[in-house]
Length: 263
Ligand code: GLP
Image 1 (cartoon, helix red, strand yellow):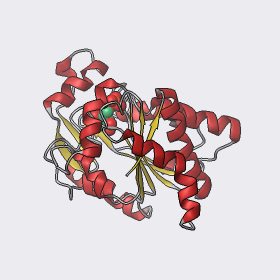
Image 2: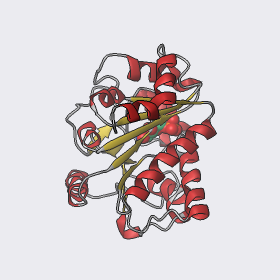
Image 3: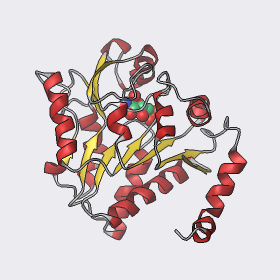
């Protein structure tokens, strides 16, 4: 894993948006995996800025979102569909036909999950997957104990996740108990992964998933098994890491190292 520690949330947002923009410029029909939550809001704002100021073109990009609450219709203000429209899609020139966010109010979630996986396959697979991390170490809604081989499916939310996400709802009882989520196995198939995290409240879980042992109890540790995973953190989220000096040295010397080995 490449660990990029930035000073502030704004820096984390800018650096992660630049990484995503670089991939879109490299491949115009990029298949982009997207995440929700507070963390990526700044990244999406930066991407919108790059689209407006530099003409970053999303017209051929296909996107797949990680997850959605079961029971919420796409127009529900707490749905991830709504979140994505408000924070990204309506500000860029992505073709709505190429946008996939799991549908929370589908009649047959099991059948729907199979269909979702099939759409990812048909698109050629995800080129770059953006991830955040939950307080319990989850990626998407892959709660503690999720198999590293898991695929898109319905998952029951862990108590901590329900409490963490209650801030978006009028009361905790309104938080859905289930979600449709890409599996850890689905995520690991992405060609590249970028996980972003910020703030002191993510410091412990970031130290655990970056420097701790691989375990399905903290599903973000699965990224240690991926050959092209990058983590972009602000200083607060990185404050409990023990090898910061090493990560910073690698970050600052990356280009000279690449030159030396002829890449
Ligand atoms: C939810 C989402 C995750 C996200 C996490 C962290 O549980 N399913 O994909 O990473 O929240 O959210 P935040 O960025 O608000 O801390």
